[in-house]
Amino acid sequence: MIDWHQGGWTGSLKKWVRNEVRKQCRENLAIRRCRYSLSLRVLRCALAQRSFGRFLTIYAMLTFAVLLLELVVSRHWPEVMPAWTRSGPPGTDIKALLNTLAGYLITAQVGVLGVIAIAIGLVALIAQTEDSSTDVQVYYHESLAVEVVASSLALLTVLVAQIVWPLQFLLHRLGEGTDLQLFKLVLATAHVAWLLVNLTGLAHFVVTTFLFVQKSHRELLRERYTANILHPEETTRRVRSWVYENAGASLIGANRKLDPDTTITFGFDWGQPQKVELERDFDPPMVVHDVRFRWINWAVRRWSARCDREARTGLARGIAGLARAEPKLVFTPQLDVPLRGRVVWCWTVGAVPLTSLERFIIERSFRFRRVPHEA
Image (cartoon, rainbow, N blue to C red):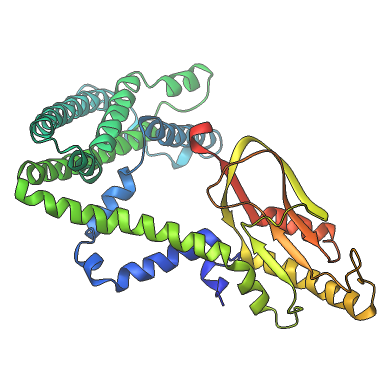
């Protein structure tokens, strides 16, 4: 029987599997030996799987938050802002200092891109000579090459745009904001921190490149990639599928008062539904992303109690001449299989129907998301 508490207060399938895979990886000595260091995990958390657009979106959110803060503070609490951030005579003009700093940051960021371009060219030459396309894919992933380039280009775009501080200029033209440079200093600090992250990514990129050009060290990169990426991904896929398909038996086992003839299935279709409970028009196509099993368990307990009462009082008697049909609750969606068009994805057989509250809970227990390549 599955302990859904591992999936949090909702019994999330995604969270349950993540915790289970994490526990298995901690107990695997081979994986622990090749595990990423703490500093590398932090770096990958900051950069991995983020695109140019994602970096710009995150910065735009920060900019608007700072802009809103400037608007609110300048209106209601102008006295809390330090006077030393006001532009002064030459040599103490913070605005001029910020422009000078932006120039230095742009120069440093262009240098980072130059180093990356040379290194990628070298790796491409080696790959072409030795026909090691698989190793190159491992290299790109392990070196964070794509992410470092995307982050560097995003920062370069931001620095060029912020030379004139367009949003702050617009705010001041509307008669709002303040002439103090405090909020520009906040964003300038973010620029410096961002550059430091990019430089750290560059250092990791260079070290990984040196390992890759040495044929004897490529095995280390492959082992690290397998232990940290391939194995957890494959284990997650297998465990996730097993848990989802066996969740019905676990729910029955967790409810001792449930009729032993009751069947609850996930990811299987038993033919034509007798009583349609939930249907939806999946346009655009979607897949099951997560399931909140503790919520479903609550609805199942209520439903099974009514089925039992109906059986005891003789109200659920025969279907097509049979003495009594076994109650079935069927959830047809399969994991990672796109649902298209009008789909009946929850139905019952030989049982009392779900109440509107139970349907509401179950409908929100299944989390769907768009198919990535069709989003």
